[in-house]
Length: 254
Image (cartoon, rainbow, N blue to C red; front, side, top):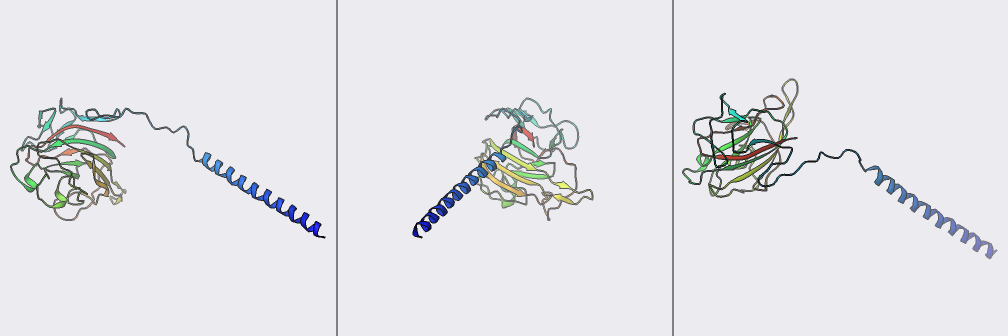
């Protein structure tokens, strides 16, 4: 009787070991199948040549290389009247703002700018200009190096909406960079906002706006609001009466 119980016990243990082994094998196979099923083939991104400090990526549209103003026009109509110098262009006071001849929506925009080396004024009168995506949504350009002004109007702010995370300004007269990732707002047929716009901005390689939501037009006073417009609109640079310079401007449509 004891022998029968022992044999039965050994047999049961054997079946249990085989069952466990089969279960572990099935888990391993399922894991391999799941791993294999997540692989995506045949949808490789387009190959581009990345740029360097002086050259844009190969898929970029060059808006300013310092040799001409062919990509720009006055917002009043006619030719852009800013001055070509030092490999870029400089605001000519009272000549008016300028804009691109082409229109853009979602994009990556690279802009280099410089406030005057000689400091004349302070607050909003010191190296003031602006970069307007779709001619409506401003990333502020200002000499904010040891310059006190309202926080949502300093360099790198989404004007009157979002204060930059840090003040990454270089001294007056030094070239600075903005790398702007812009997601354009979308509208319903009736003009209501369907999806808001978003900004990510790096200044001199430092993140200063982290995917912040655009609340509407970057108005000087009052609450921001949206107005329906085309999916693509020009980029404008502001003449605010300060001798701000720009160079090496390029854009990638997203």
